[in-house]
Length: 142
Image (spheres, rainbow, N blue to C red):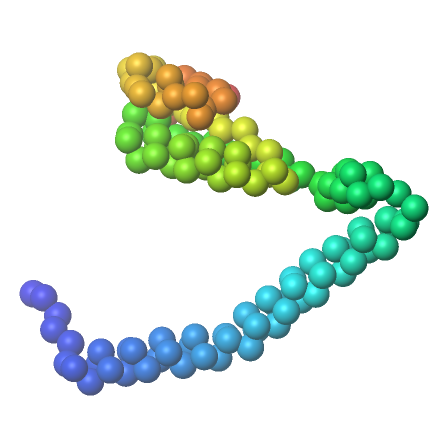
């Protein structure tokens, strides 16, 4: 038997959701302000390290060297699916468009799907074959 809720139930549920979101708004704004302040302070500290007797190119090189690149390793499973290939392409595009991000993309797939399109994509750094957890759970964990 399917349970049918009255319109009042749905209205109260919507009001509860809105009130929850509104009560968490100050916390979200505080977090955003703290992040902006932190980023502003780090940018100002990097600029203060530059002296005025250097050329513009030297200042740019020094400023770029103080900003560290973030390195990520992304591991995706289900390499046989087209959505995995789409996600890989999107991640690679993001990594290539942001110079402060270094990204290594690893795709995992079972042996029986080893000839999927994701394996041959230039966006994938490493394509690894894994055993099925149904066939051999111990080998899957290794």
